[in-house]
Image (cartoon, rainbow, N blue to C red; front, side, top):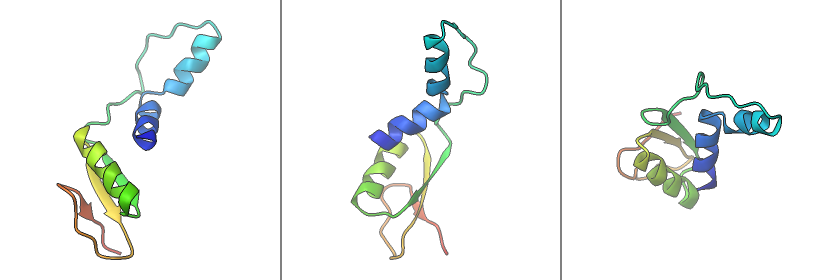
Length: 83
């Protein structure tokens, strides 16, 4: 959940907007901010945390690719990237 919140925060430039708000600047512009839907998330390591992350990311409409040293069974639509 922390990774998903960071992905959304970075895609929406939440940290920049927070800094502007603390300086007293009200910026209504959403230029450079993106939705995460239909974006691709790459996961390195598809253990317990990686599989749970892929389920959450696919719930947001993201495409998921992963790499692991062992061949793993994919969850839902995610697929393993070859070396």
